[in-house]
Image (cartoon, rainbow, N blue to C red; front, side):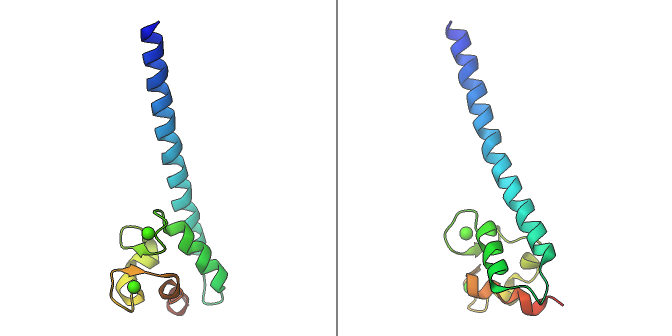
Length: 99
Ligand SMILES: [Ca+2]
Ligand SMILES: [Ca+2]
């Protein structure tokens, strides 16, 4: 009986791990596809959606580890106040860089 309980706990722990992983992966792929669809004609709202997808720790700032793709490549250009993180206003600068 103890062994069954132990296996159950292990399975539960593994599935909760996978659950978290899946959420993160889908956020990153959502962010990547949104980023890929952005153009100079994209709206402020689309950039705001991208911001919330990239801000995985929800501290209202994109750190260099949260940035992906062209946001990551242009991180220092976008970080106009040089505090090593991007706020939603700074991320809007991505629109000017997209052609
Ligand atoms: Ca963050
Ligand atoms: Ca900044």
